[in-house]
Image (cartoon, rainbow, N blue to C red; front, side, top):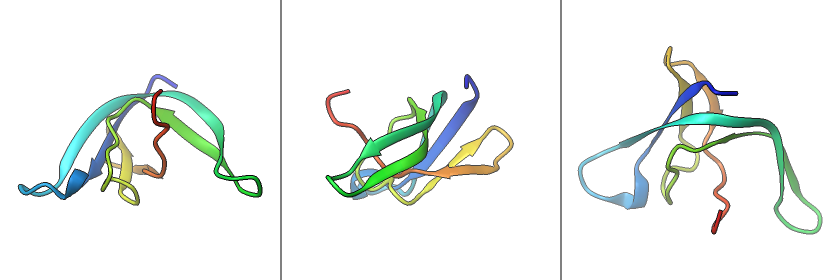
Length: 77
């Protein structure tokens, strides 16, 4: 926790190529209920801006190592 991260993606399909957002890991091991039968587990919570189009793109540390894949956004948080 506290480690800086970089989220890379092509948010909203806007022209101009990929977008990079910087944030901080705020929690590890989070879970999100997707529906009544499915829960995503062992997630990295961070505050990097994740927009539609960024899912499936890398979440990297300051060394450029991929530490996760941008997967979910909790709306209204």
